[in-house]
Amino acid sequence: MILAWFDAREASRFGADLAGWYTSQLPREAASLSEKKFIARTESAMKQMARRVDEFKLRQTLNVYKRAKLANAFKWALRDAGYNTAYIDQLTEWLVAQLG
Image 1 (tube, rainbow, N blue to C red):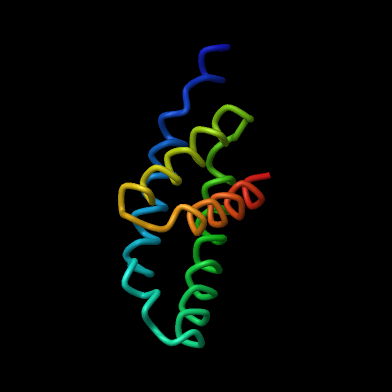
Image 2: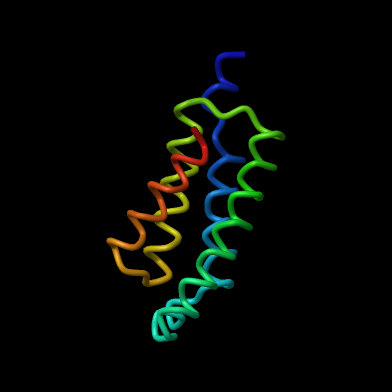
């Protein structure tokens, strides 16, 4: 029973998948779009991401450890994709707030 508390495989997988989905919606090259288009695409992606997070929270019970593993997997997947560190930190902070 206590071991289930530490089983964060599903949360880590979701975090990496969420980052992969985000990179498909807003590739790094999207930053070269006009500011108006970039903002519109980002808002759309964030709304969809919020829905995905809400659906995941309904399926999974997230404790502090699992939320941390999810956010960490998300953050490192975006780093591996080559996004700017400050941008990654902002996205990860937003994600942690959504998980709360």
